[in-house]
Image 1 (cartoon, rainbow, N blue to C red):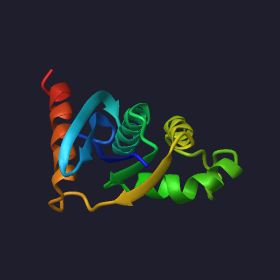
Image 2: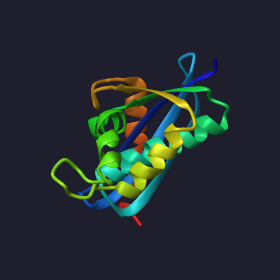
Image 3: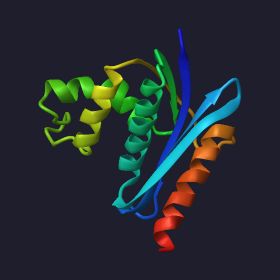
Image 4: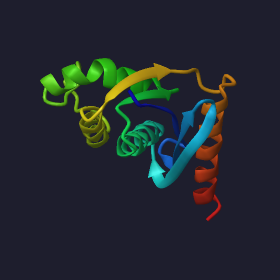
Length: 149
């Protein structure tokens, strides 16, 4: 089975503010692909979700039968592995009956996760993980592009 290993990160300066997202694809301890982007007015959580969605699009288009997705976002990991089931059952409402934030991105992520087997893993951010730190640096570069316009 072909497994694609991907690290993701997203962030913004201010919340909302200029934001960036990034992912790196790793094979045998080497980066084989990386991508990033930005948005002028966004939130940290939207950028985390955008990074994951773009990573899955890439992995699935590279015939990834299985994706190991490593994120430093508990929001993303818990949202897609636990919370989303009740959100969908409750008409995209939280336990407090409020509309789910970033619903557009959650729905898109849900569609992409239906197309492949994803193993979700969480890594502590800013803790020295090489690929997480690489993503973080890419995110900062993307934010700086907007800030320095």
